[in-house]
Image (cartoon, rainbow, N blue to C red; front, side, top):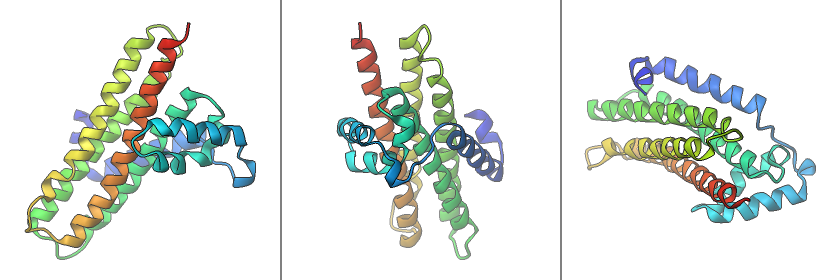
Length: 207
């Protein structure tokens, strides 16, 4: 997190974009509707029922059914990747808003703070995706604990993003645009955490 805070905002956007591209070109590969295996889409639909936002969960993951198949591990990995990609979109949106004319000093400060929080969340999800590589080896519970902690921290960063927009002395359009992005981020990350928790329960219950 400290490295992210010390970098420029433009560097943060570049890192998010590059990492998201790497994640999706090397792991999650969207399929066309005709290519989606029925058993995989049903697996995703059923798995998403454990999340707080099952419709958002299914809609965000169904296109990656050919990658997920019926693997709880791949499901959690893709969910994290989708959440990270969405954070990239939020960063781009906030950057455009920040560059617009007529913003009040308080609005500029709130947006910059929000970008820092989003950048922190990117760092947490970045670490989480790397930590997933260790789940297939020894010390599963240790690495899973790290994973759960970091994804939870990412959610906290997303929630904190809106703190600076409280009160009435803010442009309603700006506030609504930011809220729309952040709400989606929070839902996707919440769903990813629920699928990770389900993965933990499944692995622990296995003989």
